[in-house]
Image 1 (cartoon, rainbow, N blue to C red):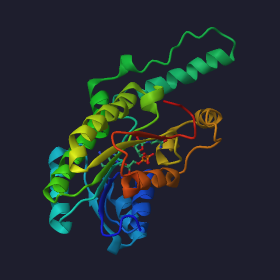
Image 2 (image 1 turned 180 degrees about the vertical axis):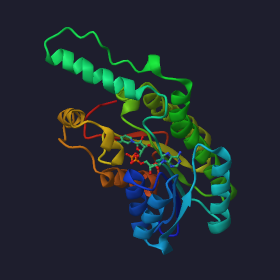
Image 3 (image 1 turned 45 degrees about the horizontal axis):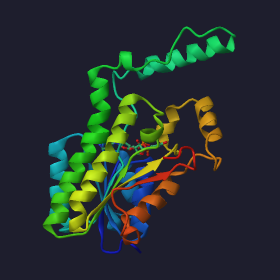
Image 4 (image 1 turned 90 degrees about the vertical axis):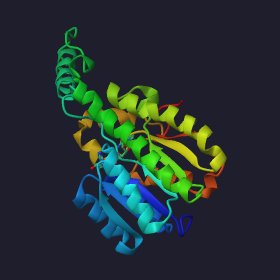
Length: 274
Ligand SMILES: NC(=O)c1ccc[n+]([C@@H]2O[C@H](COP(=O)([O-])OP(=O)(O)OC[C@H]3O[C@@H](n4cnc5c(N)ncnc54)[C@H](O)[C@@H]3O)[C@@H](O)[C@H]2O)c1
């Protein structure tokens, strides 16, 4: 019961890793504020962990005012905040050129399969409109910042030595994934290092967990051939399950990790080394 009497906000808790993290922290005694843009998912998460163990809130983390209201409510309701897990994230946004890249990769692979010298390239950046770039950064980076700032306002107000965990990605290190996604996840590296220095004197810890591929609904869009090549590149021989990552998050968020701050904890089965 590492989180007995503690309050944890988990974003993106309506499915996938966020749901597993909320369940894990709740099993260890935390009261959970499960946050998502999708109401049905986040309500189901709270139904599963038990209404006494948490509340569901609909909030778009990319909306600064909505995030402020969310954390003000947390403060009013619980009078404390011990853990923030910045898990909500997106891999793609409208007008980011992903659809064109998928088509190009398929055509390029077909050319190679026919024994031709490929004339089609896996471009995405030349088709990425501002809206697509900002769409991903707004959630993965700016949304994480809004949640961190508001969490800190509650933690510092009540002198709580809290723990903040961002879900970054191995993509930040390996460069796999589209540029807006990799950049958004890499930005979290600098963010936690700066925050670790700023907040260390208050006893507040800030870290990233960096998963490799994880078996969540986000993977539903990935073609099977890509999944097969991912597994082939993982020395431990499988894609992670959400619970694998939830276990790591629970450790980093807990007092057992009391000396870990500003760190990037890689949990990718050995697929990429820093
Ligand atoms: N699945 C993977 O292979 C993988 C690997 C590395 C990192 N990650 C990261 O882990 C995190 C969780 O991934 P997942 O696979 O569980 O994703 P997912 O798509 O299954 O779930 C993400 C959840 O976040 C919610 N969400 C999205 N935008 C939001 C917003 N603006 N405000 C509030 N909620 C929002 C979604 O509704 C969804 O319920 C993400 O940050 C993702 O980038 C995933």
